[in-house]
Image (cartoon, rainbow, N blue to C red; front, top):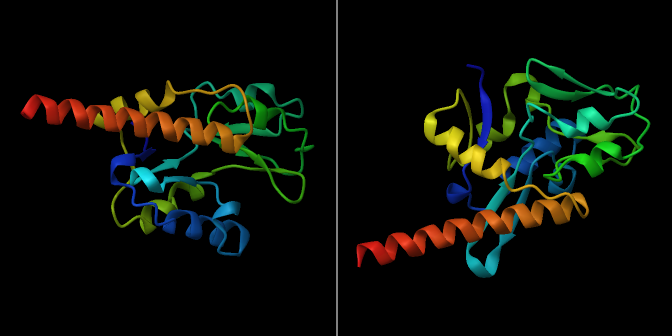
Length: 181
Protein backbone atom coordinates (compact mmCIF):
# COMPACT_ATOMS: atom_id res chain seq x y z
CA UNK A 1 0.00 0.00 0.00
CA UNK A 2 1.01 3.61 -0.54
CA UNK A 3 1.74 6.02 2.26
CA UNK A 4 -1.02 8.39 3.30
CA UNK A 5 -1.26 11.40 5.57
CA UNK A 6 -3.26 10.82 8.74
CA UNK A 7 -4.42 13.32 11.35
CA UNK A 8 -4.85 12.07 14.91
CA UNK A 9 -6.74 14.88 16.65
CA UNK A 10 -6.41 13.44 20.15
CA UNK A 11 -2.66 14.08 19.95
CA UNK A 12 -2.82 17.65 18.58
CA UNK A 13 -1.72 20.40 20.97
CA UNK A 14 -2.69 23.25 18.64
CA UNK A 15 0.89 24.56 18.51
CA UNK A 16 0.65 25.31 14.75
CA UNK A 17 4.23 24.15 14.09
CA UNK A 18 2.88 22.13 11.15
CA UNK A 19 1.16 25.20 9.70
CA UNK A 20 4.23 27.39 10.18
CA UNK A 21 6.56 24.98 8.37
CA UNK A 22 4.01 24.48 5.60
CA UNK A 23 3.60 28.18 4.92
CA UNK A 24 7.35 28.80 5.19
CA UNK A 25 8.18 26.07 2.67
CA UNK A 26 5.42 26.96 0.19
CA UNK A 27 5.03 30.72 0.63
CA UNK A 28 8.33 31.83 2.15
CA UNK A 29 6.67 33.32 5.25
CA UNK A 30 5.65 31.98 8.65
CA UNK A 31 1.87 32.46 8.40
CA UNK A 32 -0.56 29.72 9.40
CA UNK A 33 -3.20 31.53 7.36
CA UNK A 34 -1.23 30.67 4.19
CA UNK A 35 -0.68 27.04 5.16
CA UNK A 36 -2.13 24.02 3.37
CA UNK A 37 -2.90 22.51 6.77
CA UNK A 38 -5.15 24.35 9.22
CA UNK A 39 -5.64 23.96 12.95
CA UNK A 40 -8.99 24.47 14.66
CA UNK A 41 -8.34 25.43 18.28
CA UNK A 42 -11.23 25.03 20.69
CA UNK A 43 -9.40 26.69 23.58
CA UNK A 44 -12.31 26.74 26.02
CA UNK A 45 -12.68 22.97 25.54
CA UNK A 46 -8.93 22.25 25.61
CA UNK A 47 -8.99 20.60 22.20
CA UNK A 48 -7.37 21.16 18.81
CA UNK A 49 -8.10 19.48 15.49
CA UNK A 50 -5.95 19.51 12.37
CA UNK A 51 -7.67 19.90 9.01
CA UNK A 52 -5.80 18.12 6.24
CA UNK A 53 -6.41 17.38 2.59
CA UNK A 54 -7.44 13.73 2.45
CA UNK A 55 -6.31 13.36 -1.20
CA UNK A 56 -9.72 11.79 -1.82
CA UNK A 57 -9.86 8.73 -4.05
CA UNK A 58 -12.93 10.24 -5.74
CA UNK A 59 -11.92 13.90 -5.48
CA UNK A 60 -14.87 16.20 -6.07
CA UNK A 61 -12.48 19.14 -6.49
CA UNK A 62 -10.86 17.41 -9.44
CA UNK A 63 -14.17 16.42 -10.99
CA UNK A 64 -15.62 19.95 -11.09
CA UNK A 65 -12.60 21.83 -12.44
CA UNK A 66 -13.67 23.30 -15.82
CA UNK A 67 -10.04 23.92 -16.86
CA UNK A 68 -8.69 20.45 -15.92
CA UNK A 69 -6.14 22.28 -13.76
CA UNK A 70 -6.38 19.63 -11.05
CA UNK A 71 -4.99 16.18 -11.71
CA UNK A 72 -3.89 13.10 -9.79
CA UNK A 73 -0.34 11.86 -9.65
CA UNK A 74 0.36 8.74 -7.62
CA UNK A 75 -2.77 9.34 -5.51
CA UNK A 76 -2.07 13.02 -4.81
CA UNK A 77 -4.37 15.73 -6.19
CA UNK A 78 -2.14 18.44 -7.65
CA UNK A 79 -2.70 21.84 -9.29
CA UNK A 80 -1.36 22.94 -12.66
CA UNK A 81 -1.06 26.64 -11.87
CA UNK A 82 -0.83 27.69 -15.52
CA UNK A 83 -4.23 26.11 -16.25
CA UNK A 84 -6.05 27.38 -13.14
CA UNK A 85 -8.45 30.24 -13.86
CA UNK A 86 -9.23 30.85 -10.18
CA UNK A 87 -12.95 30.21 -10.76
CA UNK A 88 -13.35 28.63 -7.30
CA UNK A 89 -15.41 25.61 -8.39
CA UNK A 90 -12.95 23.30 -6.62
CA UNK A 91 -13.14 25.44 -3.47
CA UNK A 92 -16.92 25.03 -3.32
CA UNK A 93 -16.72 21.31 -4.16
CA UNK A 94 -14.26 20.32 -1.43
CA UNK A 95 -16.39 19.04 1.48
CA UNK A 96 -13.51 19.50 3.93
CA UNK A 97 -12.55 23.11 3.17
CA UNK A 98 -9.01 22.26 2.15
CA UNK A 99 -8.73 24.25 -1.09
CA UNK A 100 -8.64 28.03 -1.06
CA UNK A 101 -8.07 30.82 -3.53
CA UNK A 102 -4.65 32.35 -2.91
CA UNK A 103 -3.55 35.96 -3.29
CA UNK A 104 -2.57 35.41 -6.96
CA UNK A 105 -6.05 34.20 -7.94
CA UNK A 106 -5.01 30.54 -8.17
CA UNK A 107 -5.75 27.78 -5.71
CA UNK A 108 -3.76 26.61 -2.70
CA UNK A 109 -3.93 22.97 -1.57
CA UNK A 110 -1.72 20.31 -0.04
CA UNK A 111 0.72 18.55 -2.35
CA UNK A 112 2.22 16.33 0.39
CA UNK A 113 5.53 18.15 -0.21
CA UNK A 114 6.35 15.75 -3.02
CA UNK A 115 6.06 12.70 -0.77
CA UNK A 116 7.90 13.98 2.31
CA UNK A 117 5.37 16.14 4.20
CA UNK A 118 7.22 18.70 6.29
CA UNK A 119 4.24 19.04 8.62
CA UNK A 120 4.77 15.44 9.74
CA UNK A 121 8.48 16.03 10.40
CA UNK A 122 7.63 19.11 12.48
CA UNK A 123 4.87 17.46 14.56
CA UNK A 124 6.55 16.43 17.81
CA UNK A 125 3.38 14.83 19.25
CA UNK A 126 2.90 12.56 16.22
CA UNK A 127 -0.58 14.03 15.66
CA UNK A 128 0.30 13.89 11.96
CA UNK A 129 1.71 10.70 10.50
CA UNK A 130 2.65 9.74 6.96
CA UNK A 131 2.73 5.99 6.59
CA UNK A 132 1.05 2.98 5.10
CA UNK A 133 -2.41 2.63 6.62
CA UNK A 134 -2.93 0.38 9.60
CA UNK A 135 -6.40 -0.89 10.49
CA UNK A 136 -6.74 1.73 13.27
CA UNK A 137 -5.55 4.61 11.08
CA UNK A 138 -7.84 3.56 8.21
CA UNK A 139 -10.79 3.43 10.63
CA UNK A 140 -9.94 6.89 11.98
CA UNK A 141 -9.60 8.35 8.49
CA UNK A 142 -12.87 6.70 7.42
CA UNK A 143 -14.67 8.35 10.35
CA UNK A 144 -13.15 11.72 9.39
CA UNK A 145 -14.11 11.30 5.71
CA UNK A 146 -17.76 10.77 6.65
CA UNK A 147 -17.92 14.23 8.23
CA UNK A 148 -18.55 16.18 5.04
CA UNK A 149 -19.95 19.66 4.70
CA UNK A 150 -21.33 20.96 1.41
CA UNK A 151 -22.19 24.50 2.53
CA UNK A 152 -20.10 27.43 3.66
CA UNK A 153 -16.64 28.85 3.22
CA UNK A 154 -13.56 26.63 3.55
CA UNK A 155 -13.07 27.95 7.09
CA UNK A 156 -16.67 27.14 8.05
CA UNK A 157 -16.33 23.62 6.63
CA UNK A 158 -13.10 23.04 8.59
CA UNK A 159 -14.69 24.40 11.78
CA UNK A 160 -17.69 22.05 11.46
CA UNK A 161 -15.41 19.07 10.81
CA UNK A 162 -13.21 20.01 13.77
CA UNK A 163 -16.18 20.50 16.08
CA UNK A 164 -17.71 17.18 15.05
CA UNK A 165 -14.40 15.38 15.69
CA UNK A 166 -14.02 17.11 19.06
CA UNK A 167 -17.59 16.28 20.08
CA UNK A 168 -17.10 12.65 19.02
CA UNK A 169 -13.85 12.40 21.00
CA UNK A 170 -15.46 13.96 24.06
CA UNK A 171 -18.48 11.63 23.95
CA UNK A 172 -16.15 8.63 23.59
CA UNK A 173 -14.11 9.82 26.60
CA UNK A 174 -17.29 10.25 28.66
CA UNK A 175 -18.52 6.78 27.69
CA UNK A 176 -15.13 5.27 28.60
CA UNK A 177 -15.17 7.06 31.97
CA UNK A 178 -18.72 5.91 32.70
CA UNK A 179 -17.83 2.33 31.78
CA UNK A 180 -14.84 2.36 34.18
CA UNK A 181 -17.00 3.60 37.06
